[in-house]
Image 1 (tube, one colour):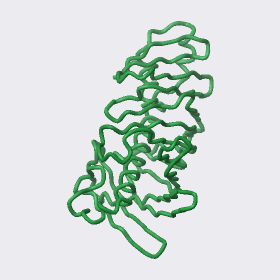
Image 2 (cartoon, rainbow, N blue to C red):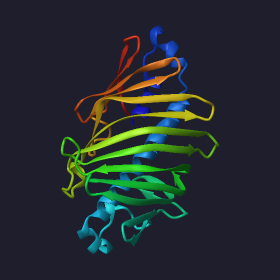
Image 3 (cartoon, helix red, strand yellow):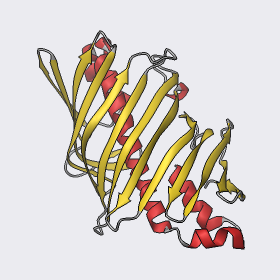
Image 4 (cartoon, one colour):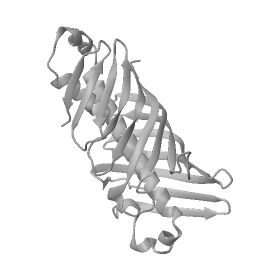
Length: 272
């Protein structure tokens, strides 16, 4: 979402000499492509969390024929392999394409769990097999660490990012870093609409041509699932010859944000 908003910054702002020189050096095509990586990464993480939470609930295991994790459609097949001390879950979207929450997915996400009861943690390892997200080939195999209770007493997921995205036209970009998602409201209620998360972390995206974009969350991003955009929080953005802070505001469920350039220039942004 932040990257989409940045694209809007550079196409919708009133230009002035202080900002225009920096704006001209930013490749807005890459900004839009980075937004697509964000979209794919967040959607994958949401699905893995939904499937893990569903599979970990014993009552769901009994009645799984009558319900599905996160309302996933029937075109998604979930297969569980059980062995002593080992559990593998395959989320198969098929080879023809399966529409999930407005996106078309193909291929498989394969997850396995390693529990540490003493530390109250679960390490979810995942790999992607012939996986496509809206016709983009996504490559990667990494981890999602769930802490049953962090220092605030909330469930928390730490996603180690190591993905490569290949677009149909051959453009390729990789992403590495960490995203930490703290589940601050709604956990265990069984109601999707009351879920609220706070997201922190930092990540770097690099294109095959060498262009690098780095991001670091300055103030935790608050995500209320009933709102289209983050309702608060800010991200520091750095690229060659460009930098600034994108801020989502103070908690209102709206489409208003600001971008502050390094020279102090502030632009009011309306997210569309």
